[in-house]
Length: 464
Image (tube, rainbow, N blue to C red; front, side, top):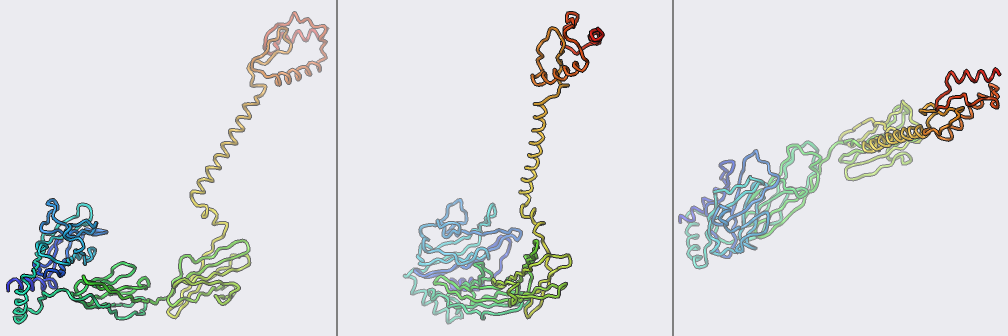
């Protein structure tokens, strides 16, 4: 009698108990089940609030909480490597990210009787084996008759909540309070319910992400204090236990006033103006283009000027005007449904001004580098050309034309020598000198410019 009263007390704690500290867990202290049936060990755990793990993993150990003792692994979320006694028998029913570590063990046998410990793995050094544990007792066929008699006795003595019979059925198809249409900003409550034995785990999903969960509950509520247009979409309610799973899909439709999207703008070329107006609304918006300075209004019915397309709740309209842009022209986009009207003046972007924006910062750096390279190339080419063609004044020892003992200069090129000779000879012909009567023995022989004394001798020759 004490055994079954303890079990009954444990099941009451399952629904009424609370967790006691930052690193704490709750699970029934004693669980009794029949051989050949299944058992579910309800489990919840907590950890310090300052820890915000992206993913939580968990491990169930048998008979020891210390990993260094290498206890048999009953279940491990990271891998499928578990003890051979539990292969194909253990399964995690809880959602670890919701701090639920509920474990199921099927096809029970007497050797599985013992203590079961849970270890949470939040990543890094944040791993902890909870000292709280559950003691499982598996009743063999030999003991079955005795316990059936005791069960009957305790039913007569106000212990109706205690159930020692095998698990019975899979969850029924979940029932939802219908698909609904709501206005943005309103509060919304969605209820999903199912029945099974034992009670199911019910989860509501959207885009494969769990939003609400209830363990061993016949009903779960998903509540929105102020529903947004982003909450619009398809949802799934799933109920499952160790005997099966069942799901129901439903839709939440959120209606809202138009919103003009940031992609809305006008682009002006030489003789064409193209304006794009994109609006999101439910019901879909009617888009109108207004040109106040010209007293013109057009919409998608004017197909000569406007083209529209629809994608989900987004309507995109394109206006094309075949004329030049003047400074007075501006265009207003108007989006309207039966909830509201939204107006916005479209900004102009000239195609010429968009060139550097299209090229981007990388293209600008490349263009600047090319410009510097061209300037350097031109500068080097000019410098090289000047070095290859030096002037007459750059020679250190110019030749003396009238030297009797002429020596070939080392730094003077033939072309320059010829030019210099010709110039000096022409100058001497202008003086009218008689070279036949010159006594060259009186001239000094040296590679330098004509000195003052030599000029005096030339003067004597001219007088003669």
